Image (cartoon, rainbow, N blue to C red; front, side):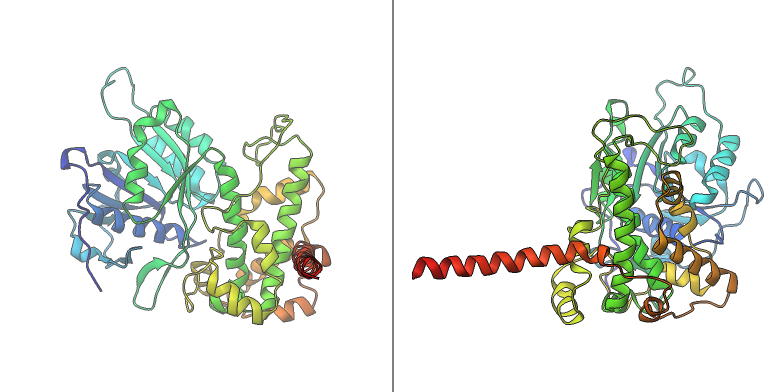
Length: 445
C-alpha cells in the first residue's frame, strides 16, 4: 500500500489553519463519531491543508484538563487508496488527546459528538471557552464550528453558546468502519453536505476546499434537513443488518431483509408525504415544541443524493425484485449508497456486538415525535426499536436474527402497500414494452 503525501495544491503555511475534531470519549452508544473524527483527522493532516489535526476526546464528566495524550496507532484508508498512519505523520501534524486546552489553538472545530451528549458538551465548552468580546479584537479571524451530527436540533443551542463564531450545519453521508487490520475505511460511497453559505459566512468557503482535499465530494444545499433525513432513512438498513450478524452485502442479497427495509422506507415516506401535503410543515427542525410555521408549499422531501445517485423512490422500486435479478444485475450495476465492500460489517453491527446501545433512539426521536403528534402508526419502525432495545438489554452481542423468520413470526410485516410502488412501476414498463412491440408490428403489417 502507498503512504500518505501532502497535496501539491495545498495553501501556503501561513494561511493553513489548525483543526480540532471533537468526539465523545468512550461513548456508550456508538464508535461512529470517534471513527469519523480520527478518519478526518488523519486525512486532513495528510493533505497539507491544515498545520495540524487534533482529535479531542470530550468527556463532560471528566477533569477540566487531562494532561495525558491518548496512545494509539490509528490508520485510515483514504478514498484514493492511500493508507495514512498516525506514526508516519508524527505528533507535529496529528495528535489524539483529552486535553481541551488545545481547542484554544484551533481555528476550526469539527463536531463529531454523540447526539445525546451534544447539549452537555456545548454547555461544558461554553463554560470553558466563553464567547469573546468582538469589540476588543475586531480583526481576529472568526472561529469556525462545523457540526457533523446526525441530528440538527442541537445547532440552535450551539449558535447561542458561541454567537461570535461562525457555525456551519452539515453532515457526512458515508459510513466508516474498521477492517481486520485495524484500518478505518469507507464502507460506502457518499459525500459531505454543508449548508449553502449566506453572505455573512462566505469567509468560511475554504472549509469546503479543505473537506474536498480528503478525496470526498462536498455538496452545498439550501435544504440540508431533507438530506439529513434521506441519509437517516438509508441508515435504517444498517440497524436492521446489525441484528442479523451478516455483512451488509450479504443482507442486501437476502430478499426477506430487503422487504423489511422496504417496509421501513414505506412508513417514513408515507409519514413525510402526509406532513408535506398537510401544507403546515416548514423546513425547520421537527423536534421543536413550537408549532411549525404555515407554508402554502411544503416541499420537504427526503433527499439521499449525497449517499447515492438513486432516489428513495427508485430504491423502493428495486428492493422487491427477485434475488436472481437483484443480486446479478442491481448489485453489480447500481450503487445503493450502503456498501462498496462484499465482506464489510457496519460500525453499528460492531456496536451491538460490543453491547453498545447505538444512536437509533436519538437519531429517530424526531420521527417518532412527529408521528405521535399526527397519530400515524409506524409498526415496522417501532418493531425495530423494540428489537434493538431488547438486544441492548440482553447484553449478549449480536442476536443473529433471520429476516425470513422475523417476517414469518410477525415481528415485521411485508405489506402490499409497501410493494405497490415497485409493482406499479414494473407493470407500466411491461405494458409500455408490449404496446411498443404491437405498434411496431402494426406499422410493419
